[in-house]
Length: 617
Image (cartoon, rainbow, N blue to C red; front, side, top):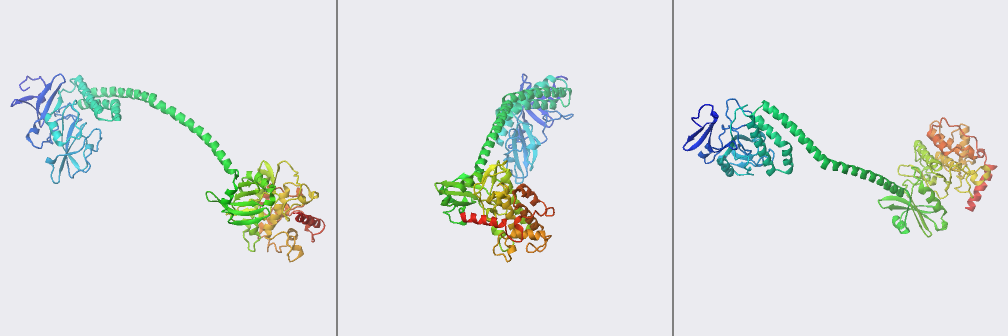
């Protein structure tokens, strides 16, 4: 009080009595002291300047509040409150009145119409913490600020300017002053009250996440900030830093332990169970996928009504063969197929059984795929993948050269690989017995595929002898041992012979037996080819062998394949190797007995046997 002896109290906080009102002057500010609480070590003040204006705001030069770093020679008030009002002046009217700071801490910009002009717009907002630069909009500048209420008074949510004026005129609580270094106990008590008020405000006004963060970290940081305000970088401050750090670490360990027990542990268990379930599903899905693939790879059985629908009531006929007619069809998904309807004369179903039992289990790029089948009483059908380029004979016997020599060699190699797969790639050896150009189909990219397994037979792979009750095949491609066992036993070499005849026709672009040849020596094409190869003559083969070495290679490989004795012929695996190699390393094979100047002797016998087969067929 004014007039107290020296050393009694703080001279900077001297109270004077004017017109029965207790007044305290702090720097440029003048405040009415309305009450003093010695139990709480606080006194209540009201800004005296607010009584002199109809549109009151705090003075811009009046900032006597604890605000971070105390200045030398400057007296500061320590408000015992957590609520502040900040006034700003903006160059434009704000369309977004929300505070850019944390929504949990700041309120809405409220207009101060009585302070606004045509080019300047005044606003006020409340904040839980001391107003920060981040609270101010880019188009605004700071005017003034003032605390109000106490830590026990709830901050008004989105209060208008008139409401804020009422709060300001009620004043705010101020902590008793202290001397630096004089009472650590007072600083700690003051900061504990500040931190407690901050926590209470969070509990009542924030979400559960903010409440948790305030309890774990916020209250400690608030306390440390308060200590820093009162004792900047003092021994007390560093002691509090050490203590708070320890407390935060302990809290973190406790929180982590709780989370581990009730959150991380269940998540770990759930993750492990999910992983085990996923692994189990992977295994189940793999089995299901395998079964679906097996079902997709195996021929499907169709009803005759399905066949009628697939072929559009047999609208488009692709061709006619010895075993029936072939029609084009379309499966669901716009998949084109070729449907072969077996004729009723084959009611015993030999070809049907042979096709389904052999080609139904084969999956090779050079073997036509059997998509499905139908068997209802005497109605039987086989459904193949559709080959848009048709059969090979339509191309090699055309008047124009359809393929380049490299392409022709590639087609021959593909056919050889397909036949070799039938002989060696399956559990049971499959002998085709009807290799000829008509039974080689071409897809859209001219990839050859062996087709028509109506005469095929299954035999163990280690069997060198194949029992066949009757000759089977097409005249001109039947191996000699199929006619008479005097030439040897029936084996996979019988398919090699047929392939050799096919190779010669591919190389020459003509059928091997041509009754309309100009000269009798040209009637049997293999004999004519061998004769010219051995005499180094070119004739009708080509103008120069060194130009078309692929043609020479096909001829030489074909002659090796049509040797009369089966043991003189190469296997299909060896044929593949010969076709993959160049023509230079190929030797001309021994002369077959039919390659003399005239077709006599054994050849006549062979021809008569073929005629007999033709008549009996």
